[in-house]
Image (cartoon, rainbow, N blue to C red; front, side):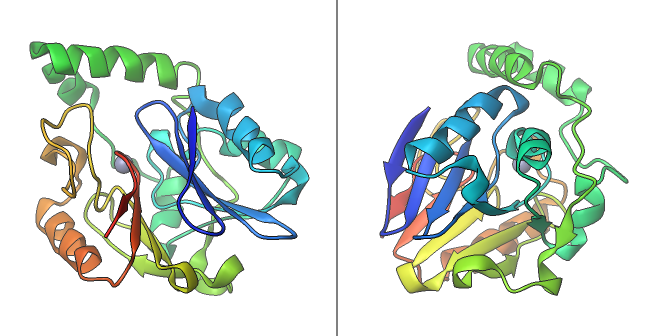
Length: 230
Ligand SMILES: [Zn+2]
């Protein structure tokens, strides 16, 4: 785990090939995304390392309900009981009414390259015991005023209900997996979309990435790859 402060109140945490972020204010802290199930201990530790107690968690926002973004949430709901919000269209995905995630068959295909084999091994370790994770308490961002003046931005494609968040006061865009800056299966770094195998609808994915690239943000905090300042 590596923690970087990218603005007055925003900390980005790099876990197992995936990021989560903490927005810290005097009284509370908001978590955006929650790592793999195997990152759970690090997610909890990261809250403490930015100077908060777990009880200070006022909400968890999720960009989308893939397993590498929701891993620590069951533990947090059990110990803290804070609300969990995501885009209205992502709520049924978070509750696992359906699943829009890379298939086992597509994962097996990744074994044909060394890069892919390394990623599959790391992923299997990180999801162990947590494959059936669901977030039954997930609620829609449309029904609440989000903490810290965060604005949700619907960015469908990677998943149907994928939602980015903009912290306009600090110019920070949390782009989730709609716009990333790297991935173990990608050969390049810098702003990009994830390989198509991860995206539910490729045309929508590209349109959402363009929408985010046109936002006026000083800092982009992606789901994968380092945060970038522009
Ligand atoms: Zn994803």
